Image (cartoon, helix red, strand yellow):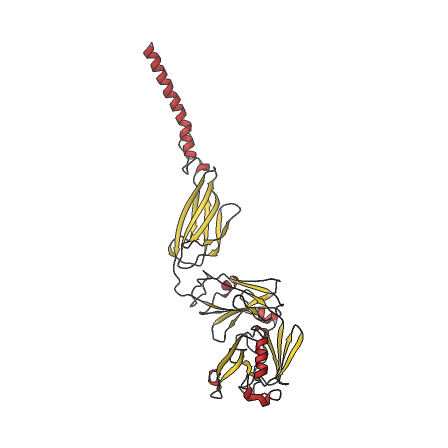
Length: 401
């Protein structure tokens, strides 16, 4: 009897252990990414792992496309895309949890890691990791931009970007350019040919800037292709500047007089001599924007196609065009100031007047030049001549019109 009872108890303990093992096995399966099975051994659809697809995929894939992540059989709860330097491509999971697209494009010559978190229809959480690399750029397009960061400029200063190589994908490039102002200034981009022959895009306001306006350029070009023969942009560009007082320089070549007007008030009239009438030595008319204050420089007529007419050091030089028109001191022309136009195209004045005027103006100040006998209006690419186009004409130069 004792042996019989012992056997009965042993069988009872075995039955209890077996009964306990069944629910424990089921719990362990549901906590893992693997599927469970019904009574016939078929996985339950709600517990199947989420299938995640990342594009692009592979090694040395073409750059210039957003990263896309899709989920089938569940929802994406988060997506993180980082390059080898730890920089992240931002993006947002769609409302239905089925997709994610990066805000920026994959850039050339980079290695990306994509980490995702998902939840299946049955509530199972899971993470995955994938990676890909992009092909390096075969040609890099660089940008020279104005004005510089932290500068204070005049009311006619445009934002100007000049490209090393041709830009054929102009609309795509223009989409990456953003101007932010402190007072919602209206303006437009316009594509022009720079005096150097290179492609260039400028942003000018509809009217002169309001004094005190704070301006920021964000050119998110990294990962954008210029098009045939242009190569890739491999960095972003930005600049922030402030608009100073409203200063307008009016140059009347018929009266041989320059007038500085600040905030609507005449500050000073200066007698000048402009370009000699009747030939290549005439001055330009229209609105020319002060590009730079270059101080004392060597001026050589051969560099502007005027033969060997002059080669001298010139003080208080203020550049107005790429083609070589300046305002500057010209003491050798003293007898003509206020009387006649006898220069080689520049606006000359006395040493004393030039020194004073040089100290008053800043890059971005407009020179509004009038006169009957000139070479014509300053072209948009010859310095900052965009102001010589009407607002409608300028808007037509945008690639997004």
